[in-house]
Image 1: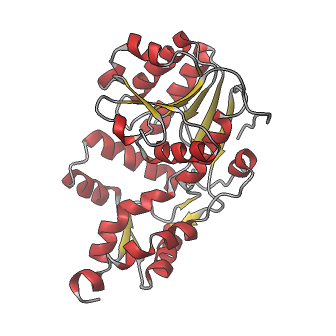
Image 2: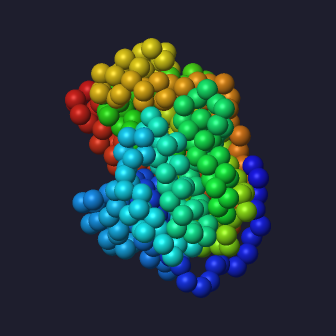
Image 3: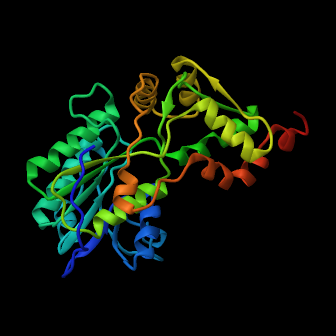
Length: 313
């Protein structure tokens, strides 16, 4: 992890602008900024303005789809007078091109500071698709000479909500993660860190690896969920081939299946175990523990167990 200097908040004219404001991290960031007294501008796709209007001033703009295509001129105009841009890309087979287009537009618009949400392990030379694309996007920022800060979070604790259907059917967390330990992070801590950086001085290329307070094996994760649910939820490790079959059967595109399996391979290799102090450094608060999130899910867990859905154990 590389740290940057602290300082007073940026003053003067200019807006805070968000991309990805309708997603998991983006919506949490809107709430974090509101708590600090800020109402940012949110760049959203046509028809999505209402989704952010309570906490942001929406601007509908064509953010592009395949290969980063879209109305670049309109995007540059939408970024005018921006002092802080939160740059979050969608999960896409060429999100590096999508990011490059946004970086170019930010440079042309004279954005004063870009805060980019990347990923732990980002590297433009990585064989792992997600890490390579994030690394290429970080390289684009550096090449354009923009003042920037990079946040590289580990796996999201909120991914646990995606396991609820399987927990309902099997009382199990089923993943191709072997005995991996992961220092997963609550998205609200990512949002708090991003809000602190966006409302601070322009970045100087600092990179922060964001993690939770401890690295957990998935058997421990299942035990935490069990405590919250009031019944046993086990962890079942499956092979990558088994996981791929399930994902493909659920309609997940082949490229996305490969990308997710590559990510789990990095977990199994021990590449997601490190615990950093970055959340506390940026926000002044310790990161949330997974047990707290599990407790928040207790009602949903208790409503999805086998005993609740089928009248049996």
